[in-house]
Length: 205
Length: 161
Image 1 (cartoon, rainbow over the protein chains, first blue to last red):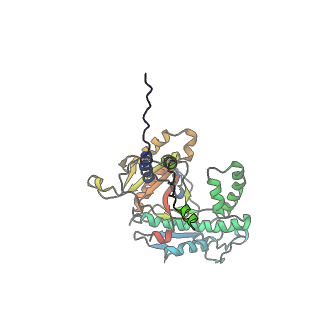
Image 2 (image 1 turned 30 degrees about the horizontal axis):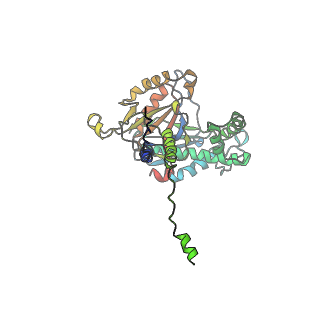
Image 3 (image 1 turned 90 degrees about the vertical axis):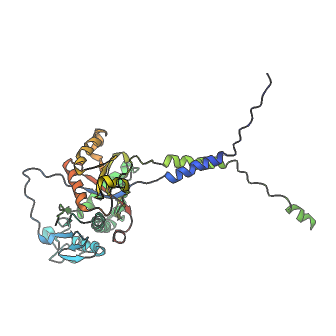
């Protein structure tokens, strides 16, 4: 039998084909990990629950958002951009004395405002007509207020911002020895400025 | 002088492009691996997520249940109207369908992972809070307490006004 040379396949267009595929995948790729504000919902109400404890008015910071997305903070209307500072001022007031004293607060110690960050509560009241994006920005500002204070204390005590430690802690690749080291620190800071954000069920008008 | 001009007259050798396909294939494989095809088709309009900056990343994609909410997209508006609706998996649903959806999702997960399940809300920024709080109320009823409001990253004060 005669020896036949197989003709060589022309591979010149391979690059074109590969490019075509490449462009297809380039266009369809979304390298995304969703991110957002994490919250924990309160557990559902049980029957015969003990009545809620009475909260003094001075320890309560009421943020009210109406159907037109206007903000009413402590019975005064306020711009969204001022909300964070107002929340920080309220939380960090620390006017308490004796058992309720707050040694690390740097606030104005206004006797009409909160006693101690551990019992200061921010209450967020929505209307059913409030837009979702306004709700998210209010939430965001309030969480930012907590994070600001926590970062400050964390910098003072450990020289690392709280948010950074938390990020390291929640990153999946972090080894458990580092996690074990971080956990007490995080808990300590969380204890100093516990996130007490209460949400009432929205009212319809 | 002639010596120098002679040297310059030589043709430029062509760049060897034989390895070009290899490089392109390498890129191709990268993007093929990194691509995630959308699993569910959206029946609501692609939600314009609100903006926030105090956010956490949602890793562990298999432990997340998504609930979408927003206006139905154009071609479903004749059937469902323009009022904001929620979408669970592939179909537009009612708020009352949420508990069932959660139970279904839980049934597909391993038992030890159940406490880690998070519900991610992808809600259009213009939706009314009434719908969102109805969703939250339903989630509370079935003890799905871990919640994440999916947002874009950015300055909340400037972007949401």
